[in-house]
Image 1 (cartoon, one colour):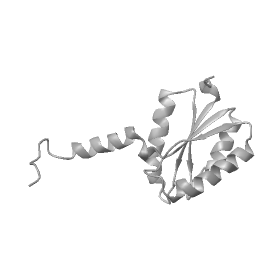
Image 2 (tube, one colour):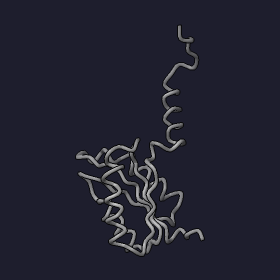
Image 3 (cartoon, helix red, strand yellow):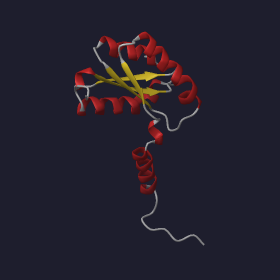
Image 4 (cartoon, helix red, strand yellow):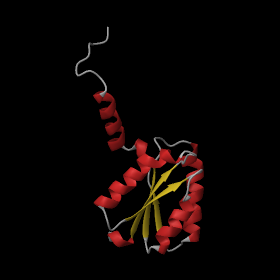
Length: 134
């Protein structure tokens, strides 16, 4: 059975930074998602330096009545934070909210659509034609 939008939440989980301007691209992604899926509860969460934390965002979605929560790591790759820190935070949320179904997805930067988009941006910076390598 597919969950309804009203019971579905999405957490965009990013590293965080001391400079609040760093979060701008992630806020833009969240706003775009909210505009395209108004019934889905979308939250940003951060590992450090910024709020809310992942457990706090999970608690917000639990309070909002979500039954299914997807967690999308907004990291370019699966480094130490995604491999070591994130599973511990996921377990904290599962223990704090046993009635919720939390699903962890791969790092966004490892998804084919994202790597294709990055390659397209890089290609756009190159001349339309290039000489073959010698």
